[in-house]
Image (cartoon, rainbow, N blue to C red):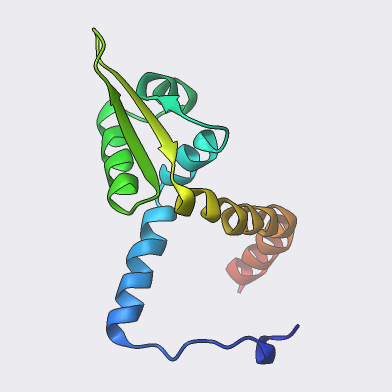
Length: 124
């Protein structure tokens, strides 16, 4: 398959803005970490926080709210004392894993090439 075989949509301002917003969400600093951790099933808030090195409680809260708002994560509150909250990927969130992991694989496979291209560019 070549680029000529792919039916690229004709960009319209509103469509481009929405796609950009979605890509900004999944491409931010923390969302992919959250999505990757949730791939195996529901996880509690504090467990997420422990597993993501360097994330603050506030940033994790904001990231989870954004992912929930976009329909990628669900939040389930259990009426226990203290309250228990689990986060889990939705169907859309699980569907996102394939493309995201393909992109991560591409980045991993091409990091040396990109690093060399950057070095060559910076020499000029």
